Amino acid sequence: MSDALAIAAVTETVRAVLGEAVQHTVPGAEVTARHPNGAGDADAARTGPALNVFLYRTDVDPAWRNTDPVGTHPGETRHPALALALHYLFSAYAPPGDDSTLAERLIGAAMSALHDRPELRADDLRAAADFSDLHLQQEPVKLTPSVLTADQMCRLWTSLGGGYRLSVAYEARVVLIDSSAPGRTPLPVLRRGEAGAGPVAAPTAAAPWPVLDAVRPSVAAPGSDIVLSGSGLAAGAPSVHLTHMLLGGPPVVLPARADRADAVRATLGEDLGAGCWSAVVVLSAADGGERATRPRTLRVAPRVTSALPLTAVRDPQGAAVLEVRCASAVHPGQRVELLVDSRPVTAEPFTRATRTLRFRLAAGAPGRYPLRLRVDGVDSPLTDAETERFDADTAVVIT
Image 1 (spheres, rainbow, N blue to C red):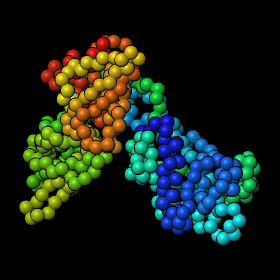
Image 2 (cartoon, rainbow, N blue to C red):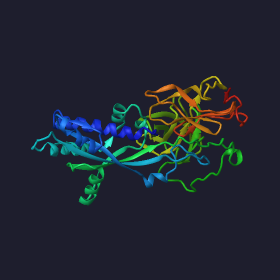
Image 3 (spheres, helix red, strand yellow):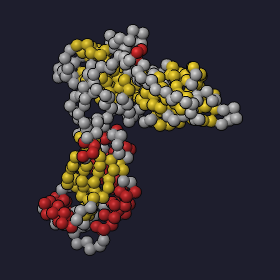
Image 4 (cartoon, one colour):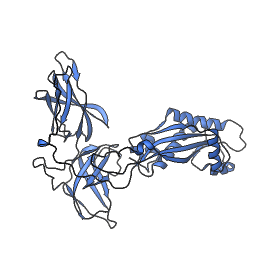
C-alpha cells in the first residue's frame, strides 16, 4: 500500500543507504540526486567526490499489473495498483584534476552496499522518506543490477547531453501505488445453503494421522467459540494453537474440549487480534508425545466499540473525518479500511498499535449508510446474530 510519493521515497532511501556506504569507503563523499548533465556542470564548484543517483526510466511491471488488488473479496471491484519498476543510473564524480581511483571506489562502495542489502527495509524507508507510506507496502522493494550493453550506455549518455562518467545501472522493483479511484464493496450474502452451512466434505475412512478439515465459523469474533472438525481428533488431549499470519509471534495456545466425534471446541480470547490466523489442533498423548494437524485458516473479525450509529459532519468541501474505536488493537502493517456502504476508505497512517482509527471521507451525499471495519480483509459483523438481518445501528449518518 503506497501513495503517489512512493517514487520519490525510493530515491531518497537509496540516497540514504548509499550515503552511509560511500562515507565509510570515501570519507567526505556525498550522494546527490541531480540530472547527470547538471551534476557535470557543478564539477568546477565541487570540492569533494560524489556519487549521483539519477532515475532515468520507469516501467510498468507486467506481472503485477494483472494481479487482483490487495484486500479484494469475491464480488468486489477495485482498480489495481500501479506497479512500477524504477531504473536508476549511479555515476561517480571526482574533483577536477583528480587522477586517482576515487570514481572506482565510489562505484565499488555502492555496488557492495546493494549486494549486501538488496532490499529496502521498512525501517530504512520510514527513516529516509517519512513523507510517504511506502514502508507499509507488504511486497519488498528490491534493487538488482541492470545489464546495459556498450551501445545502450552510449545512447543513454548521448541523450542525457553530458560526457560519460563511470556508471552502473540498477533496477528497483516493485513499487505499488494504490489507485485513488473508488472501488465497490457490495454488502455480504446473509446465507448460503441450508442454515448457512454450505456444502460439507469429509473423508470416508479414518486417517492414520489427525486431519483438520474445517474451522467453523470461518469468521469468528473474539470471545466466541470455534469448532474444529476432521478425523482422528480423539487420539489425545486436544489443544488449539493459533499463529497470526501477518504479525507472527509465538502461538496462542487455547485449551480445547471434545465437541462431538472427531470435533473439538475452543473459546477465543477477548483480546485476540483481528486478521487471518493459522489454526492447528495439537493432540497430546499419555506418553508425552504430540501430534499436530496441518493448519487451517481462521479469520478473526474486528469489533467496532464506538457508540453506533456514528455521525459524520461534513466540512465546507464536503469531506468528513471519522474517529472509530475498535477491539482489539490493530498494528502497523495491517491493512485497515472502513467500508461505508459500498465505498472503501483507507485509515490514516498510524505508527504504533492502536484501538482508535481515523478515516477521512471524501465528498458524499448526506444519508445513513451501513458500516463495516475491515482489517486484513476481515470485516466486522454487520448482521444481528439472533435475527440474521442487517443491524440498523451498524451505520454512519452523514449530515
